[in-house]
Image 1 (cartoon, rainbow, N blue to C red):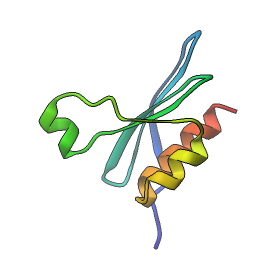
Image 2 (cartoon, helix red, strand yellow):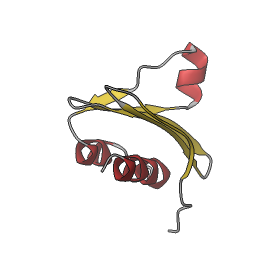
Image 3 (tube, rainbow, N blue to C red):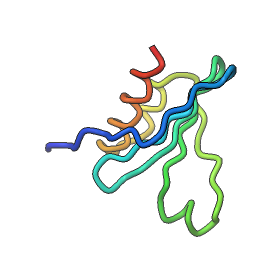
Length: 85
C-alpha cells in the first residue's frame, strides 16, 4: 500500500511546545509535542460532531505510532516527530 507524503500546513514553536498541523491523503491532524507529552488530535467526524477534541496523549511518538493503525496518521506523526529533533 502506498501512502501520500504528509503536508505540514502549520508549524509553531513556543517556549513550551511544538505545534504541528498536517494533512496526508484525506486525513488531517494537529500534534503538540512538549517535554512531558506527545498529543495527537485527529480531525475526523467525531471531532467535528462534538466541535471540540482534546485528542489522545502519549509519552512518546513511538507510543502514538503503536496506537494509530491508519498509515496516513502514522506518516503525520513521523513528520511531526522529525520536526522535533
